[in-house]
Image (tube, rainbow over all chains, first blue to last red; front, side, top):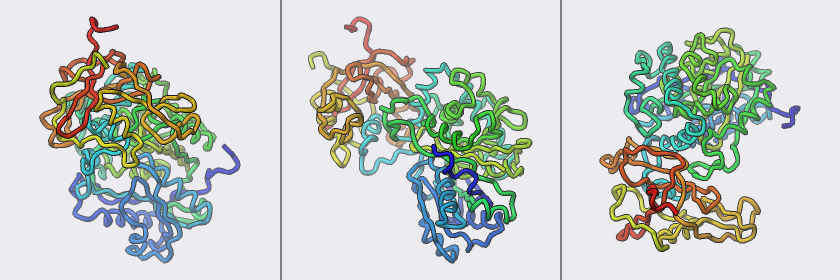
Length: 389
Length: 156
């Protein structure tokens, strides 16, 4: 990496916003309206006029056309539109692309957003049988394997075998998200705590995933405003600087492939190394982590690949005690994550990573300075960011 | 293929789409071969590297001259899962069912996926030896590649 020429500290997140979060099918408004609510709120939070936004960045095939958004929101200029070529692995990539755009001068204030209304569109947890399988899905769908849970369970099972992981490690990830959601009134699972007993007694979706190992399906939207570090200092909120960002993949890690060389992995070995290199810090410096919890077991591997513990230490490290606020060693998914706050394809995790640096999380880690956000794992390409105050 | 097994019943009901080659045809030979009860993996005509899933060029030497190599229906379980939640309503009564990723013995660790025949509630062991069972769907004109545990007496 060329250490002189990186995005480090050239851009900042200056506003966060979100729609109300709903159970799947619970939103009375359209996916487009959800997106607009989140973007307007993020602009208000930043203390800028909505019409000052001049760019959009999103990921995972977001359905909200940027020109329609620009027209609906009354933007004066549209200077940058970018959709990252990813699924849930692209959350941080969208923020990184916005950061690059403002640093390069393509745009001044880019709204990064994701909106989802699974009650109105297709459901991610179901197979989509129309048209027949094509390409790699042809090697799995005829055998009843098509959903993200089924695809990722195979990778997690391999990791569990290689490192003698117990089910309790997966449970700890799920229980941690539910624990934190109990402090967060925005969370869909606020007021609905989860016990270890209820976790273990819950039905299997696909072994080794119980019901509570799998994220919810929701309706909602979240957004942040990204601008240059220089401009951020003049705005209302404490600037949250983008210290580092990375995106990519390990070798031959292709979506749906059974022949990924490092199959029992989260596809973050390469991307995590690049992130730390750019930031100039190591895992011991990170105060708090938001890691895309689509499936507990994938988060577990992600933590290993980001150096928070060795693979063979996972049973000792992955405990509720270690991962929960206020006293855990590595507070994880402090707003409740995809498992218990809301599944907005992970965008709300960026908002929470920002709140931790600002000091306003509902599970505020004391003196948090360095806040990491990791996008969807065991998918490809993946991405991550480090924020700091 | 002398000692091959042909399944007498379908492991899953016929509600899932018929396997069809990718629109660009890069895996057509694989599916055609299964109907003949043969397992093919891609083989580079220039550097002899094997690769799966099929692609238009060899990822090692970038030759576009790729052929196919037939390999035996033998392997070991590399990973597995037991599916309880139906991804389609037509699979509701078929749950639970077992899925295995099999590393092929004769193809330098290349992997294919199928269902593990037998009791869907059985204990599954990674590393266990399995052999191919061809599941012909004659009316719809396709064959699936399933797997069953190699019984101790039939080990070579």
